Image 1 (cartoon, rainbow, N blue to C red):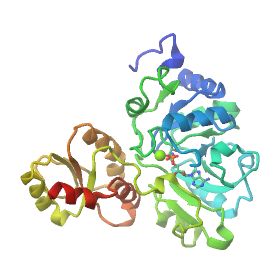
Image 2 (cartoon, rainbow, N blue to C red):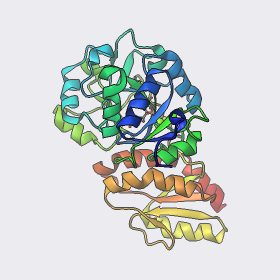
Image 3 (cartoon, helix red, strand yellow):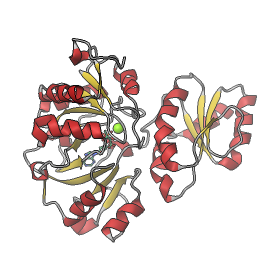
Length: 348
Ligand code: TXA
Ligand code: MG
């Protein structure tokens, strides 16, 4: 699979050498969908200035049309093409964290396609650090274009962190909706970017819409002021819907203190359960790292693996409630949506 490119390169998994990256840039310019590696998760990319191509992302994912997409730009890109009234705080954060796993929500330029912004008056911008993504963005439209890319999974599901995960979601490249998958290895961070809204900074201050590897504390340190939590008027984020990032198998997030007894009770009711543990001493459990960076790196691959086992329940030991675990806890809580109800049913 990772060998030389076959003649029909456009419908292949492409090893991310210079030639493959150049070909991926041409495919994007031709209006095709290409799955690309970033340091967080794989993205399903299209030319942000091509409304038909962007619309194809929504139909491939089964994503509601009013959910905005993040536009990915090269480090050298001119942001005035996308955003207007960019506050000094945005420049501070870009300087500190770009390229990297941080998305900024800014006021949009009116020329930006509504299909990208979900009709909102803001735009999400991110400059990814993955060398393959950067190389691609430099070549695509000579480094001045933008690539709209949500995570390369079907709506509501676990984000992909390998090229194989993308193919598990969308099938072989060229056969399904995705023209090519650019293979950049396993994503280093493993969970989606942190998202900070700066569109209402004058009235509401900076708002943390989605925590990620870059924590609230990191961002507050840079800004020298506190981040707010989203209120009703904050821009919509589909990743903040309650049931999101979820495997198909029900998932329960359980405190380490009651984990062993819960598993015994489930076993007594003949429920088939697999678990992810950090500290809990559970026979047969998949052991996860106590280092949050490594945990995040491994999390989605493990959830996908457990999801394929066809069990009744995935049990996850609740990680610590400290700052470094924020992004992970956010994703686990959404994946465990309704876990109390599920547990009650399985233990009935
Ligand atoms: O790490 C990431 O952010 C990955 C990689 C591929 O860059 N992308 C990603 O995209 O996670 P997606 O679409 O799965 O999640 C992006 C989130 C969505 O919840 C979307 O609603 C929000 O960002 N978003 C995008 N543009 C927005 C805007 N203008 N206002 C508010 N939220 C926005
Ligand atoms: Mg997503």
